[in-house]
Length: 86
Image (tube, rainbow, N blue to C red; front, top):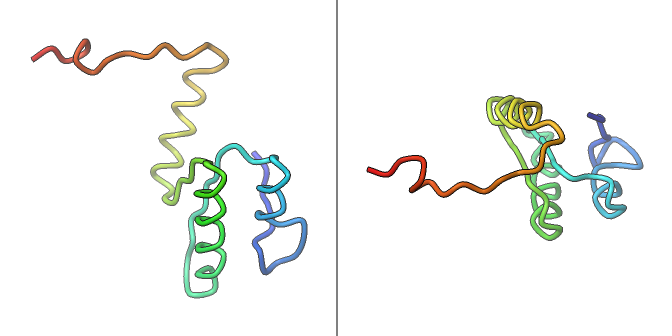
C-alpha cells in the first residue's frame, strides 16, 4: 500500500497516479472542509476510470481482510441462490 499526495499537497498526486494507471483500488477517507475538493476530484476521477473507491475505514478494513483472505487464488463466482437456497 502506498500513500499518495492529495491534489492540493503537491505532485505527483492522486489524479496523476490515476491517469498513469498506477492505482487499482482507492481508499479515501475525507475529513473536514479542507478535503472537500480532493474528495470530489478523487471520486470523479475514480468514476471516469472505473476504479473501485472505498470511503470509510470500516469498509477499507473489510476489503483489505477479504483481499488478504483471497491471496493469489483465482476467484470463483458463486450464485447467492446456491449459498442460500431458501
